[in-house]
Structure formats: structure tokens, C-alpha cells
Image 1 (cartoon, rainbow, N blue to C red):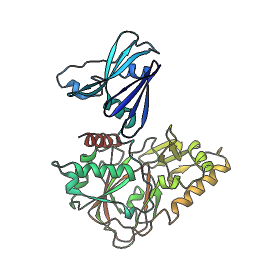
Image 2 (cartoon, rainbow, N blue to C red; image 1 turned 90 degrees about the vertical axis):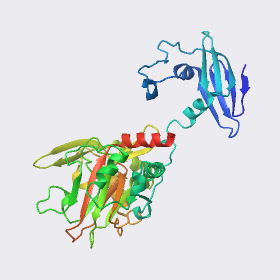
Image 3 (spheres, rainbow, N blue to C red; image 1 turned 135 degrees about the vertical axis):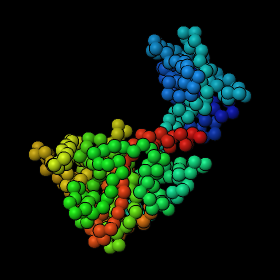
Image 4 (cartoon, rainbow, N blue to C red; image 1 turned 120 degrees about the vertical axis):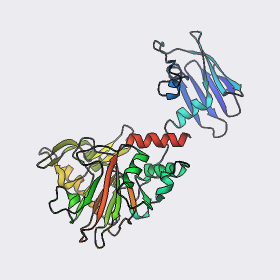
Length: 377
């Protein structure tokens, strides 16, 4: 027989196999199976670094908890100091308290990033900018938090009013994450050279691509500082992969996510090669990554003809003026931060050899860690 207990914010319905918690304000419902409760005892956890402050660590995780243990009874204990507690009594005679708000937030919002809804877009010039000095401020982190939130939602964000110094990009990179080492320099120049070694050092067209796509795990986050913009040509191209995927039909998506291709970059000093599909989705069928670079792709001979129709459709969508703005120049003294695995970038040819950008990569995990901390403060 189900038993009901209630507080000002929650109502709980219990039986031996689960506890159902209902919000009294929104009427949302979450079921917690008995084994979930047994294996997720609230207390000091290894993932909470505060337990290490005094040099000790208390492990409350049960190691030999029996499966399918039954709930004898549960009730809500209202405490002024600790808030509403769910008190669970088990058939093995043990008892455990769970803060109701902790249970609720664990189920409803397990990750402050997962709760963000990504927004597709078709013109990078319409995206928001954040002031450099405010983002870098150590006194007020709200501007930095909103900047990171915007980046996580849109995959691209601008930081404006950047000091025209070579060190500015390094300072911002270290403010939001940790600089990621690659075979390039930590901070490398995008400037025309007489003897170029890559596309960043020429003045011709550069088609849409991901940077370092020929690595099995390319950097996820890239920063580019516009120190000197081209006076003629050099339009910056950005295309949102999320927006493109939503325009593909399901047959083409299935072909592009299940057919591995080769990405290769071979020069006198490097030889990178990897095998992966064009599109990557997670286990919940959510789009995660697009891998695209026509100049670095070699298709295996066994690929079906149907795949090429899907690839051609993808290429046409990427180059469609509805999805790619061909008239946009990032203003000088801006830094653009973008997700290198979601956003494809390129540029048009230019004649001004004084055009000068700086670029670097940072770790996505560190950026997300910072955002979670800022949200929790």
C-alpha cells in the first residue's frame, strides 16, 4: 500500500520499490527506485573537494549493498537548520536522511550545462559581444558567467574592446580555461607568409572546415584575436553545424554518422591521420560534432554511392547563402571564441598582407568546469 507524506514544497508517495516526489508548486514528478536511493547515499562524497580541507575523507558509499532492498517506510522531517529531509527506513533496519532539495535538483537539473538549450543560427554577425574588461574582472564574475553561457548555447561568442596587444588572447584564454598544446605554437599567428606551411598563411580563399580535423580528438574550443583586419576582402565565414544538421533528412544523417572517412594531413614535418564519421551524435541522439575539411578528406573505396549524395547535400547546405554569411568582417580588437567541433569556419581571399590574427585552443572541460562553479556561486 502506498503511503503519502507532505511538506510545504514536496509530497512523497512511497512503496517498497520506489519513492515518488511531487513538487507542490509545479506538480512535476520524479521516481527514485529503492536501489538508486541505496547507492546514492547523501553525505560526504569524493567528488566534493570540501571534504579534503581538513585532510580527511569520509566515504559513505555502500560497497556491499544488497540489490532490491525494500523501503519499509519514509517520512519528511522538517528541520529549520538543514531544511526538509526525506527519512527512509529500510527492511535491513538501516535509516538514511536525504535533503529533499538535493534529491530534487539531482534529478531535475543534474548538470547546469545540460539544462541549457542550444540555439541554432545562420549569421555570425548577429551574435552577441561581451566587454573584455568586464569578462576579465576579478571583482564581478557575472559578465564572465553570461559570456560562457552564451558560448555554450550558441557555440560562438565575441569579446570586444580587447587591448591591441599580443598578450590579450593569452590572458583571456587563461581566464576561461587552460591553453591546449598542439603541434602548432600555443599562441600562433594567422598572417600571410612568403613560404606558407598551412592555409592560415596564404591570402586565398579558405573553405569551411574544422581546425585540426585530422586529429582523432581535435581541440574543441578556439580563440581568434583580430589585431589587424583586412582592408579589402577577407570576409570571415562561420556556419553553425547544429543549424545544418537540422536541415538534413534522416537518411543522409544516418549515412554521415555511420560511415567513417579518413582525415589526413601530411607535410615534411607532420603526418596526421585518423578515421571517424562526418557527424557525431550522443547516446540520446543529440548532435555533438561535425567533422569537415574537403582538403583533408580521403574517402575509403568501399563507401556506398548513397553516402556521396548525403555528403554533397551537406556541402551544398554549408555553402548556401541562407546558412553562411559571405559579407561579414569581424571588427578589429575583437576576440571570437567558438566551438571548433560545432562551428565550421573559413574566409574569403584578401589583398591586404598586413592582415594579422592570433589564435589558440583551450580545453573545453576546464571551460565547462568554470561555468558550473560560477553558476553555483
